[in-house]
Amino acid sequence: MSDKQITLATYSISDLSKEFDITTRSIRFYEDQGLLKPKRRGQTRVYHLKDKVRLKLILRGKRLGFSLAETRRLFELYDADKNSISQLHRMLELIEDKKTSLQQQMDDIKVVLMELNSAEQQCRAALEHSSE
Image 1 (tube, rainbow, N blue to C red):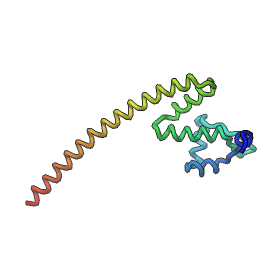
Image 2: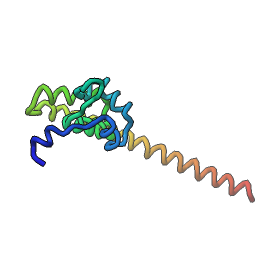
Image 3: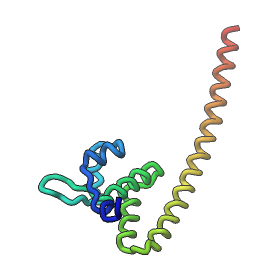
């Protein structure tokens, strides 16, 4: 496939919905949020490779815990700065913030697991004691 064919590839909303295993409603929501901007042929949405890549990035960001506002900001930075220097700096800030948040969550989970293990041991001990 040539670069021109790749550039001209188009997708319907149902194509993207099936490929990414999400609802068409989700895709329309991302459009409403200004994250996707498909062309129109009458009432039909026509998505191009850029839209497909952005949808992939939206979903990846979502899995990593990025808000839609953070994702939108990255897209805005990229659109404004094709060299992507400011986007990369902002992305590094977001990554550091996300890592800090995830580390805190991990620490909190460890504490809760210890408390649950302790409660479980107490319950088991009480059951053993009551069955004697």
